[in-house]
Image (cartoon, rainbow, N blue to C red; front, side, top):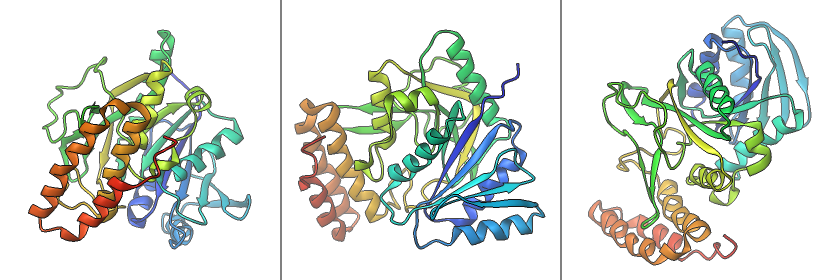
Length: 329
């Protein structure tokens, strides 16, 4: 079966220039050719454009033409890709969701695609991963399903037989998330269709154009974390399917851009603050009856930071709990 639907690949860069360049290079070997890369530089201090140009030269890739669309958007026509590489630089970092949304707006304005694949920059994808995502979407659509968000099998880059997760489960009682299969050895135990997930993990989210037009952009109030859960919740409430595509493999270095890891031992202060704040924001928006339990659960977080002797973080966490920017959730 052959498809030729165009896919925009929306890659969000904040830090880790080496990782971003390796991901671009990764797409030189992708088996599905009908994609267009959007590199969104979400760090005004990063001169990623110069690094991309140096990378092009180092790989002996011919730069056919450079288009200056406006002050923040450039397009590089390369002989190695079917479509020009799009480079967008923000003037101010307004969070991960804002970066994603800029890429989405660019694609919707072009109106020449069927799908979008949103990726963290610290990712390496299997050469057939995109083809499998397109096939998965087409299969579900042919069966009359409303395809919303499709996730890949996420594995750890530095330990590629260990799963990061195949999707997520969410507890509305305490606003806690858990990756299904997290830290398990991949023995094929999740290699099947129909596994129920509560949300698609944000490191790799494959969406349809119809979903973007109907459900809309990511909610930028989250800034960092929970935007994937929010999008998934909105999708479900409009009747869209959340799908796990087990054939599509993605390898995640995880947390390099913002300083975090799944076990929480190396969380940055930024991660700590938004991890707490956004649990409240999400709960107020979708499950307000459970807010008392969510607030109660923060006692454990505070005690945990004391146990780790992270006293400097207590003020941040308390500030997140007491923040009043939730009224219009």
